[in-house]
Image 1 (cartoon, one colour):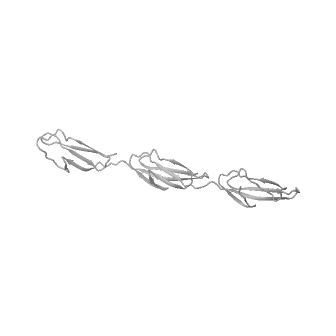
Image 2 (cartoon, helix red, strand yellow; image 1 turned 180 degrees about the vertical axis):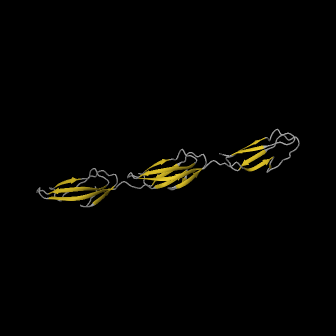
Image 3 (tube, one colour; image 1 turned 30 degrees about the horizontal axis):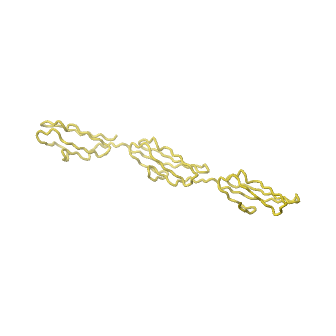
Length: 219
């Protein structure tokens, strides 16, 4: 339905497979034949219009080029996040100890491109690789890689504070009133993942009693 000039180049949307061509000769008695316009491919496609005059001898040939826009090669990402944090190709993300998977969000600038994510699950302590492979509409690919480092469990078994009956304890002997059978011992590790256990703070007897605080590190 669009008029075009002879020998012109017409640009068509990508994916166009055929067009309806209609050529009209100046002489209504002339014969017109059109070759082309079907089974179009990406890029240039030739159309030939042949007009035969009423005398059956005189022939004129006209050419036309139909350019079908090729599929996009755009493999860029509009957004790339791991666990909600924006990341870049060849970047590094650090996650807490015992993390076994991360959430990966990757969207492309070209809606016709597709995304495949690999390596986001089955994470181990140390260095892990997450990849996002983008396939463009023209089937070309690009892979984005991010290093995900899972922290090691801490070996810190030190104490931040130690209190006996509400008083800070550092070293030495604590004297309590005669008849005391129980003291309150509160041990707070420096590492929140460590666990402290108290032994011997009950069933106290007159004289010396030993209280033990055992702190187990996360690892």
